[in-house]
Length: 249
Image (cartoon, rainbow, N blue to C red):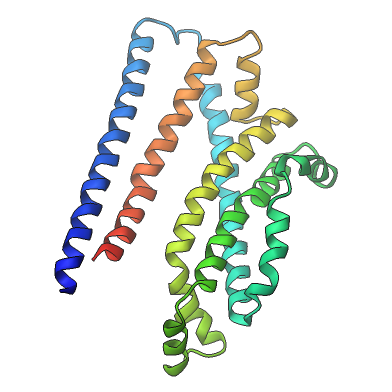
């Protein structure tokens, strides 16, 4: 009976995954086709590609550093809270903090770090950390009582409980929180670069759009879309597929 129920779920997941994959590939094929048409027509002839790629590189670097800091802090803090058993007590407090508009904090970050790349990184951390932290806290908070009891019975106590029970339990939540966090991180980094005029993709787009829609702005937009799509297909999609497959089976 269990296998007969599991198979339809597995087939349903595979068909849904295949449909989403085909749809995303179609959208990306259309985008690449437009780039090829515009390129062949000479539309991008005046674009300074070296400057564009340098700007994208700066932004991507800041996002990568911010994500690394955010995922380390967020997961560590969530595991410590889950291990200490105060999840219910701190949940409302963190909920209030995450609802503070992130861009309203930019003056505070500028005051401490100035108009620098470091300021943008730490500002992005303050945005990326919340979905990761809440995803892990929620997974720990909603863990079935039987799992908690089984971990206790098999000796998962003290620090061992964190490494052998809470951390593996939180892996799907870390993945889902990271996907949301990275999406927010792109917005945070690019938005901060636009506001502060610090060199990066945000400033590149800001400068390219001074006279309205320009070839440089269109080229920059397509470049970011291709990067985001590539990362999603090569990193997040395989991880999500593996996680969903395990759940379906």
